[in-house]
Length: 199
Image (cartoon, rainbow, N blue to C red):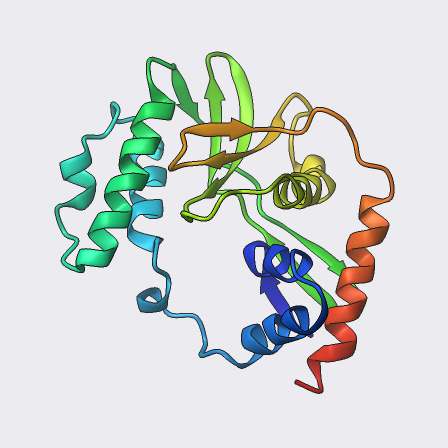
């Protein structure tokens, strides 16, 4: 049974035609996950750990102290600065975000938001977006909808699902439900399942 990340699935959904098929093939045939292949792993873990340990707003140099790769350092600086800007003067309190799986047609999509934060009294379950490419509304809709569908049973009910475009210091959460989106996502998973064995 194929098991893919939420980020991979959103990348598939965001493409059409041959690029969509190529993305499925790329995901299936790439090397197994290893920390060295996860470009944003250190800065992501630093942000999560900072909140788990209830530390004050982190200083950019602390987040970058052990980064030797110039490309990573440049990107991490942009991420760290955007995150500090978003944090601003907010009061943030950590809670453990749930992890769940969205499954259909024999394909599992792991839905794993990085942060559970009570922000100025408002509980948020947050998926972090680190890339420099602009974050489209379609991508946000897919991520927050899948979070709502899979994570809601493990929550108390008052939490808001959100995506944080870290570099741009912009938190986005859905304002209205999107009819038929679950059916559309199930159809996307049927496409992945049909193509998986032949790529």
